Every structure is written in structure tokens, then in C-alpha cells.
Image (tube, rainbow, N blue to C red; front, top):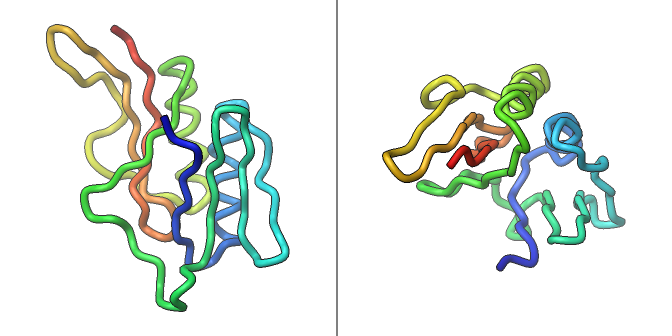
Length: 126
């Protein structure tokens, strides 16, 4: 459905360190920097990228926005969360755990990245 996601970062190098750590837990390669100072994580299913805002203003989180990364197990979601905390992320919402209803259950772990973007790791249970 999506080709790419680009989020703003006030310090791309700091954000790259954070995303390299959490995405490695999920089996992804480190990001690649380009000549403009942007960072790209290339996968067959799409691209995730970090950039200073083009307008020169500070990066800010999208109110109501969340970017979710798929996790193959609850244990990987927990490891993702721990890697994020160890690399400049901030825990938000409830602690990692099961959420859902009678028909859908998910294991979710939420963080804010160093620039304040809301992200999560999600493992579908049913």
C-alpha cells in the first residue's frame, strides 16, 4: 500500500543511531546516508527515511500520527522497545503488552523517537 515514509528529524545522526538500533532488532539493515544528509532504510516492501525538514524549521511530531513497525513476536517487540529506550527513545502510553478486543489481539510497544515522533512495534496475535 505504501511506497515510503519520511519523517522529520532535528538531528539526523542521532535519529539514525536510534533507528539503526531498533530496526536491527527486527532484522533490518542500518540506514544509508545520502549527500543531502538524509537517511534511508531500503527494503523490498518500501523505504523508511529520516530528514531535516526542507523548510528549515524544527521537526515536530504529527499530532495523532503513529508509525508502526511489524514484529514477528512479542519478544521482538519487547527487544525493540528496550533498544529504543537505550538509544534515546522515551516510553509512552501503557507498557508493552496485549491490546485488542474479541476479534483482534495485538502485542504493542510504543515509543517517542529522539525528535518526538510516535512509533510502535506491533505483533498480530489474532
